Image (cartoon, rainbow, N blue to C red; front, side, top):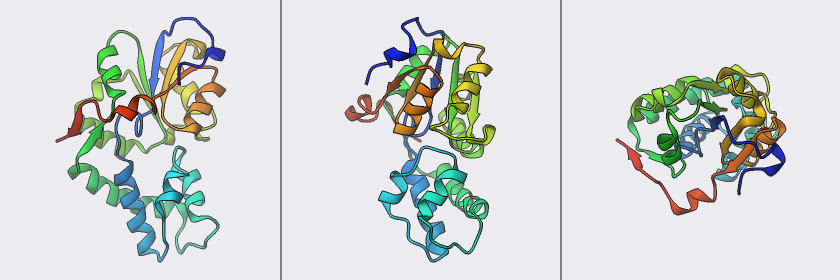
Length: 207
């Protein structure tokens, strides 16, 4: 979908990219890690439960994965176990780079660019190092930096603050309904990259 006209027609002075699902696709890796963690706890996590609830902070999405089922460990412990498995996979598995990444690379240095991802910083760091993208961003904000995850606007507002651009002059690139809603709640223009991704990966997998 095009940029949200309700956010204002002024030219963008700063860009904010979501990460997973927008620039790269490591969600299958995260699903495998969650699925194994759930299985070790005697629980099933279906693809529908996972992909239907992703987009926010782990502390918010894991309870939705559980659907009220009892779990032998806390949400924090479940996430910690998943992170160990995910990091092993992120270091070794191919990482598909999506079509919107071409925009990130092309626009680098033209405007301040921030990342605003609900993911954990440690996992993001692994991917950034593998891709050599750390210098592509002037600021990186993760789910660990805010109290409320998407669809609350907090993560985008903090990203705008860190690149010193007024929210109404920011353009957000997102791939989830919660992310689009969060950008709109922050009074930012937003481009839903799901249409662009219909053409498939732009660059190919990371080595």
